[in-house]
Every structure is written in C-alpha cells, then in structure tokens.
Image (tube, rainbow, N blue to C red; front, side, top):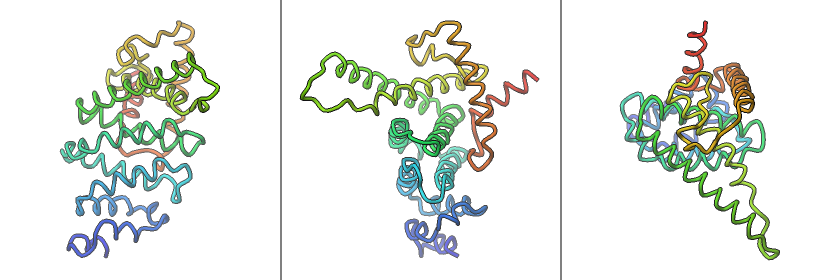
Length: 251
C-alpha cells in the first residue's frame, strides 16, 4: 500500500522508511520494496544516510539486512546504466568505507566492512574505471597521510601531547589489504591476491616465504567468504565471481 502511495506522490521516502520495521527489512519482499521507494522518490541522500547509519553501527537493530538492501540499490543503479547517479555520492561512500576500516572492533563490524568492500570492488571492476581510479587514489592518499602522522608522533614525542590515536594506524593494515584485493580483481590475479605491486607502487615487498603465507591465508579467507551464505552476500560480486572463475579453471 505504501509503495502505491509513493508512486502517487502521497508519501515521501522518509515517511515510507518510518513504516519499515527491522523484521520487515529482513523479509523476502523488503529489498525490492525499499529499492523501489528510493528510486521512485529519487532521494539518493536518504539511501546514503542509511548507508552511514547501518555501516558504522556495530550492532544495529535488524542486523545487516538494511545495509545489504542499500548496497543492492546502488548496484541496481549501476546495472540500469545510472552509474553517474552513484558517482555523485562516491566520495561520501568512500569516506564511510575509510571510517569503517578504523572502527572494526567485533565480528559484526567486520562483516559489514566485508559487504561494503565487496560492493566497492564490484562497482570498480564491472561498471566504472574512473570510479576505480578514484577509489585507489583516495586509499593511497589516506595511506600516505596516516603514515606521515604516525612518523611525526613517533619521532617527536611530547609529554604534553595527547595519547596517540590508534585508529589511523590500525586502519593502515586494512587499507593495504584492500588495495591488494582491489588490484587482484581488476588485474585478474589468481587466488584473490595480487601482491599490490602496482597499487602500492612497490611499497610492499614480502619475501617468498611471506608471500606463500599470505596467499594461503587469502585462500582460507575466500573459503570463509564463500561459506557465508546469501544473507551476508550481495547478489552481484566481482570478487566472488573472480574466485569462482579461478576454481572452475583449475577444475
């Protein structure tokens, strides 16, 4: 009924979202209904606001259902040839991703990060090279910025200065790993690991033994991702398809 009211211009997107309970957001028809509401209302800002609310909340009521619907809506726009609409909000989405990487404190927050990163890689690999470059450049800029901040705090300690904020430093490891994964999918490296030779400009130089250890860990991570199941997976995933393609080739 509310969907028909939106089509007739009698209900706004904000009012429609107020009618959706957490249980409804997990239902089989919730996804299409929500995505139609955002599309009919033309309110991308509401979808981006929900992305921030549900991506950065470690234990948001309703689980990861609403976050998945938002990401699926963004992928629907790309599939419909409306990548430019998503591009207008790309910087806000990338900033949300950076904040998530510095706020991983539990399994639930890590699961939300996995979903958002799966979405980012899919958009970069399947829909827009320009947005892929912006994603990589933004991550590199953050990596260099946090590196300079960490160096300054290490080399110029002061008894009067506040304690070092561990968030940017911890985020560096997530940024390095994600850049390597992004490169692996874009360049079609086997096993979901590309080493980051291009993305990190040669800044990551593991030994042979370290490289083997990383590849084995990434292979195990890919198996965990495959076993996560549809509730925690997007319907379209360039990362998952790349790994499945590797398996079919080896088979």
